[in-house]
Image 1 (cartoon, rainbow, N blue to C red):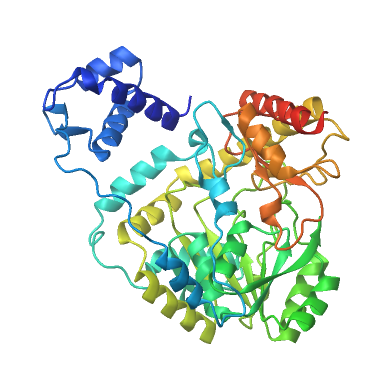
Image 2: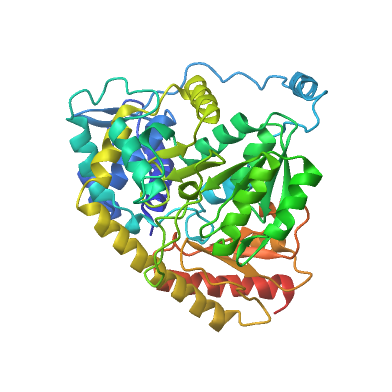
Length: 485
Protein backbone atom coordinates (compact mmCIF):
# COMPACT_ATOMS: atom_id res chain seq x y z
CA UNK A 1 0.00 0.00 0.00
CA UNK A 2 1.29 3.50 -0.77
CA UNK A 3 2.41 5.50 2.26
CA UNK A 4 -0.11 8.24 1.48
CA UNK A 5 -2.93 5.65 1.37
CA UNK A 6 -1.85 4.34 4.79
CA UNK A 7 -1.87 7.87 6.18
CA UNK A 8 -5.39 8.56 4.86
CA UNK A 9 -6.67 5.24 6.22
CA UNK A 10 -5.13 5.70 9.66
CA UNK A 11 -6.34 9.30 9.92
CA UNK A 12 -9.85 8.08 9.09
CA UNK A 13 -9.74 5.43 11.80
CA UNK A 14 -8.46 7.85 14.43
CA UNK A 15 -11.04 10.45 13.41
CA UNK A 16 -13.81 7.90 13.96
CA UNK A 17 -12.47 7.04 17.43
CA UNK A 18 -12.10 10.58 18.78
CA UNK A 19 -15.52 10.47 20.46
CA UNK A 20 -14.04 7.98 22.93
CA UNK A 21 -11.93 10.78 24.39
CA UNK A 22 -12.97 13.92 26.24
CA UNK A 23 -11.65 17.31 25.11
CA UNK A 24 -8.12 17.64 26.41
CA UNK A 25 -7.73 13.90 27.04
CA UNK A 26 -4.52 12.31 25.81
CA UNK A 27 -4.64 9.88 22.89
CA UNK A 28 -2.59 6.66 22.90
CA UNK A 29 1.13 7.15 22.37
CA UNK A 30 2.69 6.95 18.93
CA UNK A 31 4.32 3.64 19.89
CA UNK A 32 0.94 2.23 20.91
CA UNK A 33 -0.62 3.35 17.63
CA UNK A 34 2.23 1.77 15.67
CA UNK A 35 1.67 -1.56 17.40
CA UNK A 36 -2.14 -1.42 17.25
CA UNK A 37 -2.45 -0.57 13.57
CA UNK A 38 0.81 -2.16 12.33
CA UNK A 39 1.98 0.95 10.52
CA UNK A 40 5.24 2.86 10.55
CA UNK A 41 6.03 5.71 12.97
CA UNK A 42 6.10 8.06 9.97
CA UNK A 43 2.53 7.06 9.07
CA UNK A 44 1.38 7.73 12.64
CA UNK A 45 3.11 11.11 12.69
CA UNK A 46 1.57 12.17 9.39
CA UNK A 47 -1.91 10.97 10.36
CA UNK A 48 -1.79 12.93 13.62
CA UNK A 49 -0.53 15.98 11.73
CA UNK A 50 -3.50 15.67 9.36
CA UNK A 51 -5.93 15.60 12.30
CA UNK A 52 -4.13 18.54 13.90
CA UNK A 53 -4.51 20.51 10.66
CA UNK A 54 -8.26 19.81 10.84
CA UNK A 55 -8.35 21.17 14.40
CA UNK A 56 -9.36 17.79 15.84
CA UNK A 57 -6.25 17.10 17.90
CA UNK A 58 -3.48 19.13 19.50
CA UNK A 59 0.06 17.80 19.46
CA UNK A 60 2.52 18.80 22.17
CA UNK A 61 6.19 18.01 21.50
CA UNK A 62 7.46 15.52 24.04
CA UNK A 63 4.02 15.05 25.60
CA UNK A 64 1.85 13.45 22.89
CA UNK A 65 -1.45 14.16 21.15
CA UNK A 66 -4.67 15.32 22.81
CA UNK A 67 -8.24 15.69 21.64
CA UNK A 68 -8.86 19.34 20.81
CA UNK A 69 -11.58 21.34 22.51
CA UNK A 70 -14.61 21.98 20.30
CA UNK A 71 -14.72 25.29 18.48
CA UNK A 72 -16.56 27.90 20.51
CA UNK A 73 -18.05 29.78 17.58
CA UNK A 74 -20.13 28.31 14.81
CA UNK A 75 -18.66 28.74 11.34
CA UNK A 76 -20.04 31.62 9.38
CA UNK A 77 -22.59 30.80 6.71
CA UNK A 78 -21.58 30.83 3.06
CA UNK A 79 -21.26 34.27 1.55
CA UNK A 80 -22.61 35.47 -1.78
CA UNK A 81 -19.86 35.34 -4.40
CA UNK A 82 -22.15 35.73 -7.41
CA UNK A 83 -20.82 39.27 -7.95
CA UNK A 84 -17.51 37.73 -9.05
CA UNK A 85 -19.06 36.46 -12.28
CA UNK A 86 -19.53 40.06 -13.39
CA UNK A 87 -16.08 41.15 -12.26
CA UNK A 88 -14.25 38.25 -13.90
CA UNK A 89 -16.26 38.56 -17.12
CA UNK A 90 -15.57 42.30 -17.34
CA UNK A 91 -11.85 41.51 -17.24
CA UNK A 92 -12.10 39.68 -20.57
CA UNK A 93 -14.73 41.82 -22.31
CA UNK A 94 -12.27 43.31 -24.78
CA UNK A 95 -9.91 40.37 -25.06
CA UNK A 96 -9.66 38.25 -28.18
CA UNK A 97 -9.36 35.12 -26.03
CA UNK A 98 -11.21 34.67 -22.72
CA UNK A 99 -8.71 34.27 -19.88
CA UNK A 100 -10.48 31.41 -18.18
CA UNK A 101 -8.21 28.78 -16.67
CA UNK A 102 -8.86 25.08 -17.25
CA UNK A 103 -6.41 23.04 -15.20
CA UNK A 104 -8.30 19.75 -15.49
CA UNK A 105 -5.70 18.15 -17.78
CA UNK A 106 -2.90 19.04 -15.35
CA UNK A 107 -4.86 18.01 -12.27
CA UNK A 108 -5.34 14.56 -13.77
CA UNK A 109 -1.61 13.94 -13.31
CA UNK A 110 -1.37 15.65 -9.91
CA UNK A 111 -4.41 14.28 -8.08
CA UNK A 112 -3.75 11.32 -5.81
CA UNK A 113 -6.14 8.45 -6.62
CA UNK A 114 -8.43 7.12 -3.89
CA UNK A 115 -7.07 4.32 -1.67
CA UNK A 116 -6.97 1.00 -3.49
CA UNK A 117 -6.88 2.56 -6.96
CA UNK A 118 -3.83 1.76 -9.09
CA UNK A 119 -2.26 4.94 -10.44
CA UNK A 120 -1.47 4.84 -14.16
CA UNK A 121 -2.30 8.52 -14.63
CA UNK A 122 0.53 10.18 -12.74
CA UNK A 123 3.40 12.23 -14.02
CA UNK A 124 6.12 11.28 -11.55
CA UNK A 125 8.26 8.35 -10.53
CA UNK A 126 6.88 5.90 -8.00
CA UNK A 127 8.20 6.68 -4.48
CA UNK A 128 10.38 3.57 -4.55
CA UNK A 129 12.13 4.87 -7.70
CA UNK A 130 12.96 8.30 -6.28
CA UNK A 131 16.38 9.06 -4.76
CA UNK A 132 14.90 9.88 -1.37
CA UNK A 133 17.99 8.95 0.66
CA UNK A 134 20.21 10.98 -1.64
CA UNK A 135 17.77 13.89 -1.46
CA UNK A 136 17.69 13.77 2.33
CA UNK A 137 21.48 13.66 2.52
CA UNK A 138 21.79 16.51 0.02
CA UNK A 139 19.33 18.62 1.96
CA UNK A 140 21.20 17.98 5.21
CA UNK A 141 24.53 18.93 3.66
CA UNK A 142 22.97 21.98 2.00
CA UNK A 143 21.60 23.23 5.30
CA UNK A 144 25.14 23.36 6.69
CA UNK A 145 26.60 25.31 3.78
CA UNK A 146 27.73 28.84 4.69
CA UNK A 147 25.00 31.28 3.73
CA UNK A 148 22.58 28.50 2.78
CA UNK A 149 19.65 30.33 4.36
CA UNK A 150 20.49 33.70 2.92
CA UNK A 151 19.20 35.43 -0.18
CA UNK A 152 20.44 33.86 -3.44
CA UNK A 153 21.16 35.76 -6.64
CA UNK A 154 17.90 36.43 -8.47
CA UNK A 155 19.12 34.42 -11.48
CA UNK A 156 20.12 31.45 -9.33
CA UNK A 157 23.27 30.07 -7.72
CA UNK A 158 26.27 30.35 -10.08
CA UNK A 159 27.28 26.69 -9.68
CA UNK A 160 23.73 25.49 -10.42
CA UNK A 161 23.46 27.73 -13.50
CA UNK A 162 26.82 26.38 -14.68
CA UNK A 163 25.65 22.78 -14.22
CA UNK A 164 22.47 23.38 -16.23
CA UNK A 165 24.46 25.22 -18.92
CA UNK A 166 26.65 22.13 -19.40
CA UNK A 167 23.61 19.86 -19.47
CA UNK A 168 21.78 22.01 -22.03
CA UNK A 169 24.67 23.11 -24.21
CA UNK A 170 26.57 19.85 -24.32
CA UNK A 171 30.34 19.34 -24.52
CA UNK A 172 30.66 22.15 -27.07
CA UNK A 173 29.68 24.75 -24.50
CA UNK A 174 26.92 26.17 -26.69
CA UNK A 175 25.10 27.56 -23.63
CA UNK A 176 26.76 29.86 -21.11
CA UNK A 177 25.88 30.03 -17.39
CA UNK A 178 24.97 33.67 -18.08
CA UNK A 179 22.19 32.40 -20.40
CA UNK A 180 20.49 30.42 -17.60
CA UNK A 181 17.82 31.38 -15.07
CA UNK A 182 16.89 29.02 -12.23
CA UNK A 183 13.11 28.65 -11.90
CA UNK A 184 10.68 26.94 -9.55
CA UNK A 185 10.01 23.92 -11.74
CA UNK A 186 9.38 23.33 -15.43
CA UNK A 187 5.75 24.49 -15.38
CA UNK A 188 6.82 27.83 -13.93
CA UNK A 189 9.48 28.16 -16.62
CA UNK A 190 6.96 27.41 -19.39
CA UNK A 191 4.50 29.94 -18.00
CA UNK A 192 7.22 32.60 -17.77
CA UNK A 193 8.33 31.89 -21.33
CA UNK A 194 4.82 32.16 -22.75
CA UNK A 195 4.06 35.37 -20.89
CA UNK A 196 7.36 36.90 -21.94
CA UNK A 197 7.34 35.92 -25.60
CA UNK A 198 3.71 36.40 -26.65
CA UNK A 199 1.16 39.05 -25.66
CA UNK A 200 -2.43 38.34 -24.57
CA UNK A 201 -4.59 37.49 -27.55
CA UNK A 202 -1.66 36.20 -29.60
CA UNK A 203 -1.63 32.79 -31.31
CA UNK A 204 0.90 30.25 -30.06
CA UNK A 205 1.78 27.17 -32.11
CA UNK A 206 1.67 23.90 -30.18
CA UNK A 207 2.07 20.28 -31.17
CA UNK A 208 -1.11 18.28 -31.49
CA UNK A 209 -1.55 16.42 -29.22
CA UNK A 210 0.26 18.53 -26.63
CA UNK A 211 1.13 18.54 -22.95
CA UNK A 212 -1.98 19.94 -21.20
CA UNK A 213 0.14 22.18 -18.97
CA UNK A 214 1.23 24.18 -22.01
CA UNK A 215 -2.35 24.56 -23.23
CA UNK A 216 -3.51 25.67 -19.78
CA UNK A 217 -0.64 28.14 -19.38
CA UNK A 218 -1.25 29.69 -22.80
CA UNK A 219 -4.98 30.07 -22.23
CA UNK A 220 -4.44 31.46 -18.74
CA UNK A 221 -2.24 34.13 -20.35
CA UNK A 222 -5.01 34.98 -22.82
CA UNK A 223 -3.21 33.34 -25.74
CA UNK A 224 -4.70 31.09 -28.39
CA UNK A 225 -3.07 27.66 -28.90
CA UNK A 226 -2.92 26.74 -32.60
CA UNK A 227 -2.34 23.04 -33.31
CA UNK A 228 0.38 21.68 -35.60
CA UNK A 229 0.06 17.89 -36.08
CA UNK A 230 2.91 15.55 -35.27
CA UNK A 231 3.74 11.94 -36.09
CA UNK A 232 6.25 9.43 -34.71
CA UNK A 233 9.10 11.64 -36.04
CA UNK A 234 7.91 14.74 -34.19
CA UNK A 235 6.18 17.89 -35.30
CA UNK A 236 5.19 17.91 -38.99
CA UNK A 237 7.66 20.43 -40.43
CA UNK A 238 5.85 20.38 -43.79
CA UNK A 239 2.94 22.01 -41.94
CA UNK A 240 4.98 24.25 -39.65
CA UNK A 241 5.82 27.02 -42.11
CA UNK A 242 2.22 27.30 -43.35
CA UNK A 243 1.04 27.37 -39.73
CA UNK A 244 3.35 30.28 -38.91
CA UNK A 245 2.16 32.19 -42.00
CA UNK A 246 -1.55 31.46 -41.58
CA UNK A 247 -1.69 32.26 -37.86
CA UNK A 248 0.91 35.00 -37.56
CA UNK A 249 2.28 33.22 -34.48
CA UNK A 250 5.69 34.20 -33.14
CA UNK A 251 6.10 31.28 -30.72
CA UNK A 252 6.22 27.49 -31.15
CA UNK A 253 6.22 25.25 -28.06
CA UNK A 254 7.54 21.76 -28.70
CA UNK A 255 8.91 18.70 -26.91
CA UNK A 256 11.51 17.27 -29.32
CA UNK A 257 12.57 14.41 -27.03
CA UNK A 258 10.10 11.71 -25.88
CA UNK A 259 7.10 13.93 -26.44
CA UNK A 260 4.25 13.89 -23.94
CA UNK A 261 1.95 12.07 -24.66
CA UNK A 262 3.06 10.28 -27.87
CA UNK A 263 6.69 9.53 -26.97
CA UNK A 264 7.85 10.82 -30.38
CA UNK A 265 11.44 12.02 -30.93
CA UNK A 266 12.01 14.82 -33.43
CA UNK A 267 13.85 13.28 -36.40
CA UNK A 268 17.33 14.57 -37.25
CA UNK A 269 16.25 15.98 -40.61
CA UNK A 270 13.38 17.87 -39.00
CA UNK A 271 15.45 19.58 -36.33
CA UNK A 272 17.05 22.02 -38.75
CA UNK A 273 13.67 22.53 -40.43
CA UNK A 274 12.08 23.62 -37.14
CA UNK A 275 14.79 26.21 -36.59
CA UNK A 276 14.65 27.39 -40.20
CA UNK A 277 10.87 27.82 -40.14
CA UNK A 278 11.07 29.78 -36.88
CA UNK A 279 13.83 32.06 -38.19
CA UNK A 280 11.86 32.79 -41.36
CA UNK A 281 8.81 33.67 -39.27
CA UNK A 282 10.81 35.79 -36.81
CA UNK A 283 9.56 33.46 -34.09
CA UNK A 284 10.83 31.76 -30.93
CA UNK A 285 10.93 28.01 -30.27
CA UNK A 286 10.25 27.07 -26.66
CA UNK A 287 11.99 23.70 -26.24
CA UNK A 288 10.44 21.77 -23.34
CA UNK A 289 13.16 19.18 -22.63
CA UNK A 290 11.36 17.52 -19.72
CA UNK A 291 12.38 13.90 -20.48
CA UNK A 292 16.12 14.10 -21.22
CA UNK A 293 16.99 12.28 -18.00
CA UNK A 294 14.28 9.65 -18.52
CA UNK A 295 16.08 7.73 -21.27
CA UNK A 296 15.48 3.97 -21.03
CA UNK A 297 18.26 1.46 -20.62
CA UNK A 298 17.89 0.09 -24.15
CA UNK A 299 18.05 3.48 -25.88
CA UNK A 300 21.13 5.06 -27.39
CA UNK A 301 22.43 8.50 -26.44
CA UNK A 302 19.75 11.16 -26.94
CA UNK A 303 20.25 13.85 -29.58
CA UNK A 304 21.62 17.20 -28.54
CA UNK A 305 19.18 19.92 -27.55
CA UNK A 306 17.85 22.36 -30.12
CA UNK A 307 19.40 25.09 -27.97
CA UNK A 308 22.84 23.58 -28.64
CA UNK A 309 22.28 24.09 -32.39
CA UNK A 310 21.06 27.66 -32.11
CA UNK A 311 23.52 30.57 -31.74
CA UNK A 312 20.94 33.26 -32.49
CA UNK A 313 18.55 33.11 -29.56
CA UNK A 314 15.70 31.47 -31.47
CA UNK A 315 15.39 28.67 -28.89
CA UNK A 316 14.23 29.27 -25.33
CA UNK A 317 15.04 26.06 -23.47
CA UNK A 318 13.33 24.55 -20.43
CA UNK A 319 15.07 21.82 -18.41
CA UNK A 320 13.70 20.43 -15.14
CA UNK A 321 14.87 18.02 -12.44
CA UNK A 322 11.40 17.36 -11.03
CA UNK A 323 10.55 14.32 -13.17
CA UNK A 324 13.79 12.50 -12.52
CA UNK A 325 14.05 13.28 -8.80
CA UNK A 326 10.91 14.21 -6.88
CA UNK A 327 7.64 16.14 -7.37
CA UNK A 328 8.79 18.48 -4.60
CA UNK A 329 12.20 19.25 -6.11
CA UNK A 330 10.78 22.26 -7.94
CA UNK A 331 14.03 23.27 -9.61
CA UNK A 332 14.40 23.93 -13.33
CA UNK A 333 16.34 26.09 -15.76
CA UNK A 334 15.20 28.55 -18.41
CA UNK A 335 17.91 29.28 -20.99
CA UNK A 336 17.66 32.16 -23.47
CA UNK A 337 19.77 34.85 -25.12
CA UNK A 338 19.54 38.55 -25.86
CA UNK A 339 16.61 40.82 -24.96
CA UNK A 340 14.38 37.78 -24.48
CA UNK A 341 16.54 36.68 -21.54
CA UNK A 342 16.24 40.10 -19.92
CA UNK A 343 12.47 40.07 -20.27
CA UNK A 344 12.16 36.56 -18.85
CA UNK A 345 14.44 37.50 -15.97
CA UNK A 346 12.29 40.53 -15.17
CA UNK A 347 9.08 38.48 -15.23
CA UNK A 348 10.54 35.87 -12.91
CA UNK A 349 11.75 38.49 -10.42
CA UNK A 350 8.35 40.19 -10.39
CA UNK A 351 6.54 36.86 -9.96
CA UNK A 352 8.64 35.11 -7.34
CA UNK A 353 11.88 37.05 -6.61
CA UNK A 354 13.96 33.86 -6.59
CA UNK A 355 13.93 30.13 -5.96
CA UNK A 356 14.61 29.41 -2.24
CA UNK A 357 18.32 29.09 -1.67
CA UNK A 358 18.21 25.91 0.47
CA UNK A 359 16.47 24.13 -2.42
CA UNK A 360 19.11 25.32 -4.87
CA UNK A 361 21.94 24.36 -2.51
CA UNK A 362 20.40 20.90 -2.05
CA UNK A 363 20.17 20.49 -5.83
CA UNK A 364 23.85 21.36 -6.23
CA UNK A 365 24.70 18.77 -3.58
CA UNK A 366 22.46 16.14 -5.22
CA UNK A 367 23.73 16.40 -8.81
CA UNK A 368 27.33 16.56 -7.61
CA UNK A 369 27.11 13.44 -5.46
CA UNK A 370 28.12 9.87 -6.47
CA UNK A 371 24.49 8.88 -5.85
CA UNK A 372 23.29 10.93 -8.85
CA UNK A 373 24.73 8.81 -11.71
CA UNK A 374 23.69 5.66 -9.84
CA UNK A 375 20.15 7.00 -9.63
CA UNK A 376 20.10 7.81 -13.36
CA UNK A 377 21.20 4.26 -14.19
CA UNK A 378 18.61 2.77 -11.85
CA UNK A 379 15.82 4.86 -13.37
CA UNK A 380 16.88 3.90 -16.91
CA UNK A 381 16.68 0.21 -16.02
CA UNK A 382 13.47 0.57 -14.04
CA UNK A 383 11.66 2.50 -16.76
CA UNK A 384 12.61 -0.08 -19.37
CA UNK A 385 11.35 -2.92 -17.18
CA UNK A 386 8.08 -1.14 -16.42
CA UNK A 387 7.55 -0.25 -20.09
CA UNK A 388 7.97 -3.87 -21.12
CA UNK A 389 5.70 -5.07 -18.32
CA UNK A 390 2.96 -2.65 -19.39
CA UNK A 391 3.29 -3.65 -23.06
CA UNK A 392 3.12 -7.35 -22.15
CA UNK A 393 -0.01 -6.77 -20.05
CA UNK A 394 -1.68 -4.83 -22.87
CA UNK A 395 -0.92 -7.56 -25.40
CA UNK A 396 -2.36 -10.14 -23.02
CA UNK A 397 -5.47 -8.29 -21.77
CA UNK A 398 -6.29 -5.83 -24.59
CA UNK A 399 -4.82 -7.20 -27.83
CA UNK A 400 -5.50 -5.45 -31.12
CA UNK A 401 -7.98 -4.33 -32.32
CA UNK A 402 -9.25 -3.62 -28.79
CA UNK A 403 -6.34 -1.23 -28.26
CA UNK A 404 -2.96 -0.62 -29.78
CA UNK A 405 0.23 1.32 -29.08
CA UNK A 406 1.25 3.05 -32.35
CA UNK A 407 4.71 3.94 -31.05
CA UNK A 408 6.84 2.37 -28.32
CA UNK A 409 9.12 5.09 -26.91
CA UNK A 410 12.64 4.45 -25.62
CA UNK A 411 12.35 7.24 -23.08
CA UNK A 412 9.79 9.02 -20.95
CA UNK A 413 7.28 7.41 -18.64
CA UNK A 414 4.07 6.70 -20.52
CA UNK A 415 2.39 4.94 -23.46
CA UNK A 416 -0.16 6.56 -25.79
CA UNK A 417 -2.89 3.97 -26.23
CA UNK A 418 -5.08 4.19 -29.35
CA UNK A 419 -8.67 3.18 -28.58
CA UNK A 420 -11.15 1.77 -31.11
CA UNK A 421 -12.82 4.25 -33.46
CA UNK A 422 -15.93 5.75 -31.95
CA UNK A 423 -14.88 5.07 -28.38
CA UNK A 424 -15.40 7.78 -25.77
CA UNK A 425 -12.04 8.08 -24.02
CA UNK A 426 -13.48 10.21 -21.22
CA UNK A 427 -16.11 7.55 -20.52
CA UNK A 428 -13.41 4.86 -20.64
CA UNK A 429 -11.28 6.75 -18.10
CA UNK A 430 -14.30 7.15 -15.81
CA UNK A 431 -15.13 3.45 -16.10
CA UNK A 432 -11.50 2.57 -15.40
CA UNK A 433 -11.57 4.59 -12.20
CA UNK A 434 -14.68 2.72 -11.11
CA UNK A 435 -12.83 -0.52 -11.85
CA UNK A 436 -9.93 0.58 -9.65
CA UNK A 437 -7.33 2.02 -12.02
CA UNK A 438 -6.67 5.68 -12.85
CA UNK A 439 -5.75 6.52 -16.46
CA UNK A 440 -5.75 9.82 -18.35
CA UNK A 441 -8.21 10.38 -21.22
CA UNK A 442 -6.66 11.72 -24.41
CA UNK A 443 -9.08 14.57 -25.03
CA UNK A 444 -7.38 17.20 -22.81
CA UNK A 445 -4.15 16.72 -24.79
CA UNK A 446 -5.65 18.12 -27.99
CA UNK A 447 -5.79 21.91 -28.48
CA UNK A 448 -8.71 21.45 -30.90
CA UNK A 449 -10.90 18.48 -31.83
CA UNK A 450 -9.21 15.12 -31.12
CA UNK A 451 -8.18 13.16 -34.19
CA UNK A 452 -9.00 9.85 -32.46
CA UNK A 453 -9.75 8.48 -28.98
CA UNK A 454 -6.70 7.78 -26.83
CA UNK A 455 -5.72 6.99 -23.26
CA UNK A 456 -2.38 7.86 -21.69
CA UNK A 457 -0.96 5.15 -19.43
CA UNK A 458 1.91 6.08 -17.12
CA UNK A 459 4.13 3.16 -16.16
CA UNK A 460 6.57 5.15 -14.00
CA UNK A 461 4.03 5.79 -11.26
CA UNK A 462 3.36 2.07 -10.68
CA UNK A 463 5.16 0.02 -8.04
CA UNK A 464 6.28 -2.63 -10.53
CA UNK A 465 5.28 -5.33 -12.99
CA UNK A 466 2.62 -6.95 -10.78
CA UNK A 467 0.81 -3.68 -10.22
CA UNK A 468 0.98 -2.82 -13.94
CA UNK A 469 -0.50 -6.21 -14.82
CA UNK A 470 -3.33 -5.76 -12.33
CA UNK A 471 -3.96 -2.24 -13.57
CA UNK A 472 -4.39 -3.41 -17.15
CA UNK A 473 -6.64 -6.25 -15.99
CA UNK A 474 -8.88 -3.64 -14.37
CA UNK A 475 -8.68 -1.51 -17.51
CA UNK A 476 -9.96 -4.50 -19.50
CA UNK A 477 -13.03 -4.48 -17.25
CA UNK A 478 -13.62 -0.82 -18.20
CA UNK A 479 -13.31 -1.64 -21.92
CA UNK A 480 -15.83 -4.45 -21.46
CA UNK A 481 -18.26 -2.16 -19.64
CA UNK A 482 -18.06 0.73 -22.11
CA UNK A 483 -17.32 -1.01 -25.42
CA UNK A 484 -18.51 -4.54 -24.82
CA UNK A 485 -15.07 -5.92 -25.68
